[in-house]
Image 1 (spheres, one colour):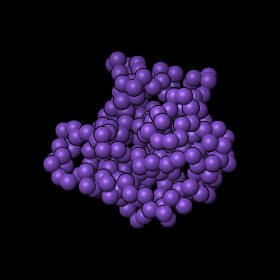
Image 2: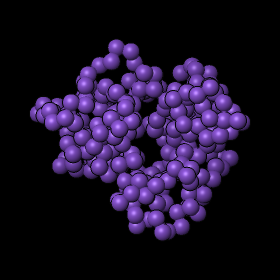
Image 3: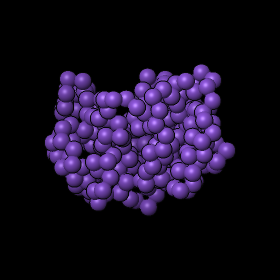
Length: 241
């Protein structure tokens, strides 16, 4: 494992917030290695590692959302992060490693998480459900700003989602991105609770499930997080006015 932990890694922030009384997917940290890239060059993953990964997934129950401690492979969702059967575990693991490699993310650990059935209206990228997701920016326990996670300009349609491209997805996205007062109160309270456990500046990502429940699904240091232009600016590295 890397000696210096990137604070955006789940290895850092998840242990600090996992016991807070807020909805979070059940999570297991499964496999840790110094060099995952070697498995993209043809090296065989040890059989025991495959068994360990499959056992962790069985404990949570299929389907699961698979990611690394630094990122998911959500843009190639069906071939990386979404694992709905045992025969897809190894294939999607390599897809996940590849997606992290393409972003030059030197991760340490494979993470499997309880699957959250999102309230979504359409699919994009590699079959990814596009639903109600939000990004909140906090600094020392205070919410600085909040934004819908998915902006129109970011949406792309790959082969797995081409059948959605000619449907009224822009109208659906606008509806998904409408923030209600109740929602803002709920997520502000949760974000501030997270900030009480994690000083400094952070992005906190939320997603709403099909029953209307909001889940905290990801976090990262604010300066390493995409931030749409707004009046607030948490560091010189963030976009803003």
